[in-house]
Image (cartoon, rainbow, N blue to C red; front, side, top):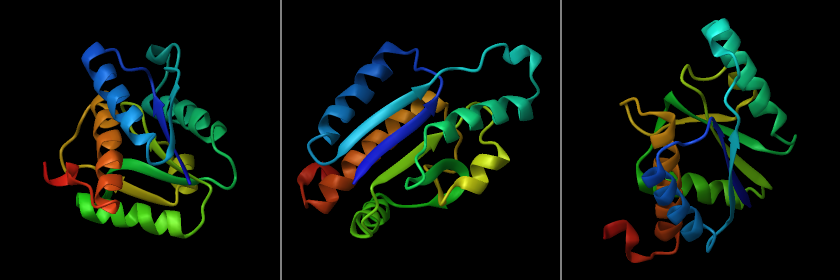
Length: 157
């Protein structure tokens, strides 16, 4: 199984980029993994929230293949412990899917079309985080999940 993260907008913070890159490299020991950064929408000042979400949604959906399983990182999603998340990943791997895609929306979340296209929603916390921080949290949790599945010591360290 391959894992892809689709994220709207680039990460500006150099320390965050370095941390994300560190976990990306660690993850590649377990799974084929990539982060795809979708460009920020141009001229957002002239767009309503809905129009901005629609344009971001189009970009997300353009980056999917029909066989992809799309999971949204969404505040209204299911809260999972790290162990539950690792079990979720194991079930996805066991089901034989080709690629699991986690989407991180823009500042206003996802368009209705993206919600309708998704096969699930996961929340990383009841708190709200910047989309830049969410990237770090999901790559760290993916890495943690694989160490749990391999019974490696990172999870308890």
